[in-house]
View 1 (cartoon, one colour):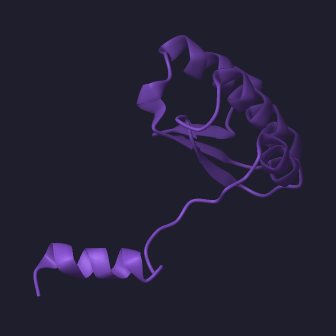
View 2 (tube, one colour):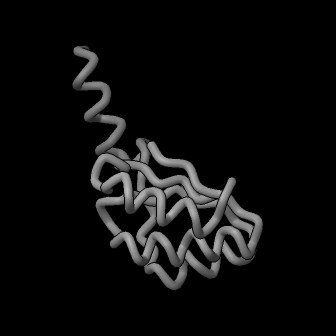
View 3 (tube, helix red, strand yellow):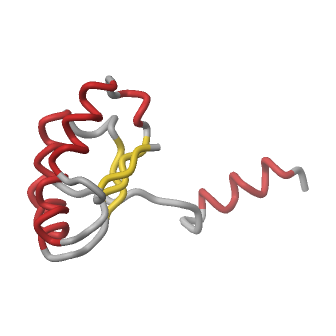
Amino acid sequence: MRPWALCAAILLCGCGPSTLDLSSSSAEAILKNGGGLTVSAKDFSSSTLESMATAAAEGGAMLRVVDANELSSSSMESIAAKAPGHVTFE
């Protein structure tokens, strides 16, 4: 079996990586309650990510933002300023 075929089989059977389908308000509630999350910058606006960062700081949680290349450096700075030490970008 070719390696790509195995990967396709794993993804098709539902055993591969998945993303949570959360609204921004649900994500903020989780973060405020101390639960860490990974979100994609492709799915949320900069202002929404700032709100999530504030919620992460309030709950002492970590917010990991992937696809950070979708954001400008000034947007990343604004998001990070809302929660120093609680946000990472990848």
